[in-house]
Image (cartoon, helix red, strand yellow):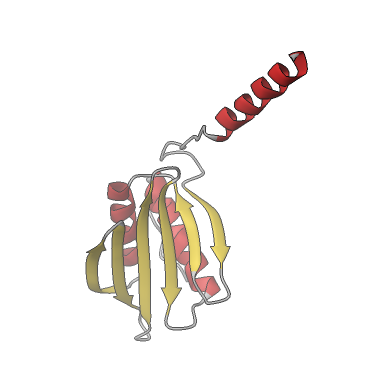
Length: 138
């Protein structure tokens, strides 16, 4: 009986510890985390901010990257941005709200994607989220 009570207590503590989430403030060095590049050419990352701050940061990053805005529309859980770069390639940026992380972003250049461009965009976006003046990417 004592072992059953101890195991039950331990299991409930482990379950409760798994439910705790922490969101870092926007001015910490961890504004963009958990970057992942998929085989389909889409770069995804977590943004430690709300959707309003993510919207401002995406727009600032697009200006710093010299992208021309084509379209911006709302979807059920976020916003989709369509841009063109200097070479007429279409850039799609999707920002979705996630209650556990803050916001999630997905970036894709053209139909096949470009890892270096996506990393540069996330770097400029990170600077915008932390309040550092964004420098144009190369």
